Length: 419
Image (cartoon, rainbow, N blue to C red):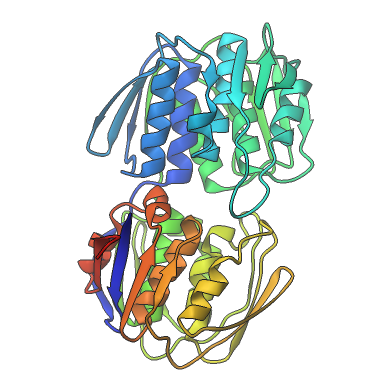
């Protein structure tokens, strides 16, 4: 098993390009199932989750071709409507094939995703919405089995804001008969990016990016081309690393307009932040100031940035209160940060982080994707050597992170588990 070895204490300087967004690429790749014509995508990141999505689509009969950051998907000869457990269990986003398969082929058999380390991610809202559109759905032997001669437009009010639920229902509605209204829809930029890809394929969608999305169903979708948006979470992670270690870095190919909550907190922490059309320059002199944060659906503070800011608070002046409202188990990185010398107290869904002058390197273990990013940031500032185990979590959502950090001056390398 591979690990990361980090020698802390080196400021980051230079320039790095932001990769395409995993959380946008995955649903857009699933959208290829809605058409029998090719969908060409640019700026697709080289990630383990993307590779898993390609395996799943291949299992369904979708032909794919990848060259660099470009992926072409052709669902003209889909041979199966079943997404098996062995693939779905490794990536919960696999549930996003449910809506497209049902809408185009009239049936789908998709494994329930199972447990998740960071907490509950129920698919009941997906099922509720599809049933409102006329689907017959049952749970059989761990699979969601759905059938519908043709989905019908409906008004759907979700009980909670759900990103993948909104995306699944929006995709299904593109081929439904009539108008579908999704109330309490997720407003995340990745939902808007999916809508843009669907519109490029001939869908008729109004209101994406708001809490009320209206989809006017069409008979068929055609092929199309789309460039995946920049990853706002990857961008925020790099910025937190610079704020923690000091130095000055410019991000290119970024989407600062999607990052208001993150950038505001970085400024509050004492960072100098300059924003251009597609660039962000951050500089940090001295020790950061502790910040309080509360996670919330977009445009609030992203739960996917919580661990990175907690790492920043660990070495900040003062104390920060971190409240997690999205996932109930998203403090598992706290024990690992404490191994590095962090002063963190947890009560329920709130963590009080009292900044210390410095952390000390130690062996730690990543527990999920964003926790691993937080541990990397902590390792970059810790005195001595830090090794991070289970970095396959990191590879799910960050493209060659250690190489890109090393190019900015970090002392970081990937090693085999026995090293």
